Amino acid sequence: MEWGMANRMAQLIQSDGRALFLPVDHGYFQGPTRRLEEPRKTIEPLLPYADAIFITRGVLRSSVDPDNTKPIILRVSGGTSMVGKDLANEGITTSMEEAIRLNASAVGISIFVGSDYEKESLLNLSKLVNKGERYGIPVMAVTAVGKELEKRDARYLALSCRIAAELGARVVKTYWCEDFKRVVTGCPVPVIMAGGPQVDTELETFEFVYDGMQKGAIGVNLGRNIWQNDFPVAMIKAISALVHHNATPKGAQELFSNEKGKKEKKS
Ligand code: 5RP
Image 1 (spheres, rainbow, N blue to C red):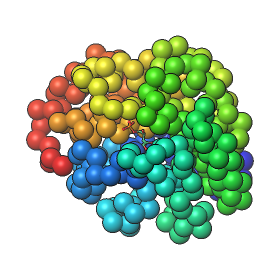
Image 2 (image 1 turned 120 degrees about the vertical axis):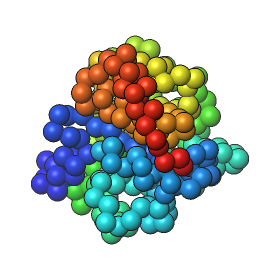
Image 3 (image 1 turned 60 degrees about the horizontal axis):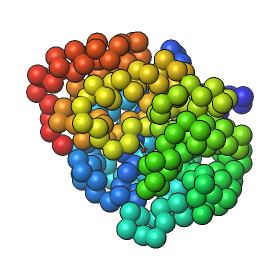
């Protein structure tokens, strides 16, 4: 690996081999998502506990001060919306030159395996990898499922992750599922777990993160289950304990309960 690529990967994946990415990119197709209406207010209290932030250029420029030193993973795919015809019909929205100008440590793009736009999204990933490799910028592939949440089984996610890795993604972000080991085993690059819509209890989140880590994921890219929680700082601290300190779900729950008693600045 070239020095620049290796250096950027080291910024993203910590010396323990683990990573906690904080995604706040949801507005690029969801608009002002609940509790991300004013991104700066959501991001500021959580940033100290994240290893990197996944964000579009618009929110980066408007809502993160340039003296920030946390690594940036720039969301560079988009062009569709929740109310449009097909979420899968994404293009590349942001050039590699812009990513360099914004001092991004990586770029992120969604792929939609099995959709009408499978080929376009996979070729977009390939084009991005070609450019990223030229400049030493890693590409994180996001295995997106559009509105069809039922696609989140091990067979489908293993297929998507493997394809993303084969096309050159340096990191793959996917959903946790039953039999998650199958997904990780078939993917020769590091796998990160997304959360999806907020679940009913914190413990459910802790349990799937723990299980995924046990099965080989290197960390999380967890958004709504952190910042839509009533106690987002307590939540990210508990997730960090799972990712970086081998906490159990019970340990994470205890930490969360202790931390939530402390005053948090509400978004
Ligand atoms: C949305 C994304 C998010 O980065 C990803 O889904 C993780 O966030 P969450 O945990 O809220 O699902 O790709 O565009």
